[in-house]
Length: 299
Image (cartoon, rainbow, N blue to C red; front, side):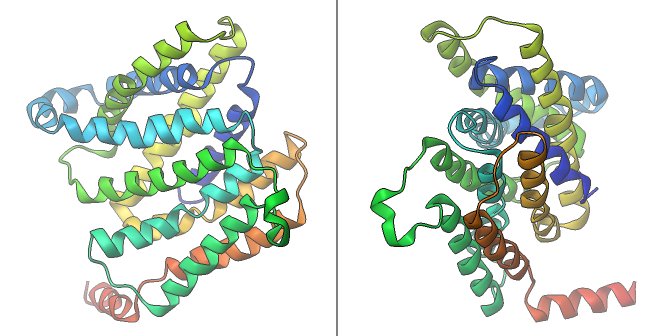
């Protein structure tokens, strides 16, 4: 599952690049998560009904998760696709495990090693290298695009989403919890989608728009988010976060093969910094590794 999760997310990069001119960002995100939520609610209907009182008690949590994971990491990614490339989206987004590691240290009080610190530094340096297009000596001449900035915000938002999933323990299964989060995300997205629909010159609804909603709901929606939640609950946040370094590989291949995007030298250098950085940042301190090994051997 760890290998397929980043691949399903890579489908979203294609959707983000195809969507402009067919469907607006917040409308697409609302359609995606409403449909995904409906599918998941049908699957987990008995559990959701059984745990309805406990779920309603913590409704602010689901609104928060929906805001972070479905508005910023959903609609804003589609918005970014209007001005940046799928390759940039994949490379910048790839650094989210680094922020997850930092957040786990600061918020969850996990230990932090020197090796992890080095990894955080070089991975973030790689992200900056992609954003400035490798033109460090001529920053004033770099053409900044809104899309890259939106993806940086989405990267931070995804790290917060992943950490809150871990911090806010839930009696719900991965499927039921994602269904509840989709409900929260749909509520948060609704006013933005309505404002977008009525306030701007939006494309008319079409078969192509419906197809994008369905693809986004099934693969990077239900598939990727459910797989991520399941893997995190089963294997732990750090191991799952480390698997996301496959994102740049899948995203770059998608951008090059399907979208005819050009791989630049700054992409290669950025990836050469980001991938080892994520690997180092995701390594647990030696003490934790020894303890886990001892426990595994005893079991």
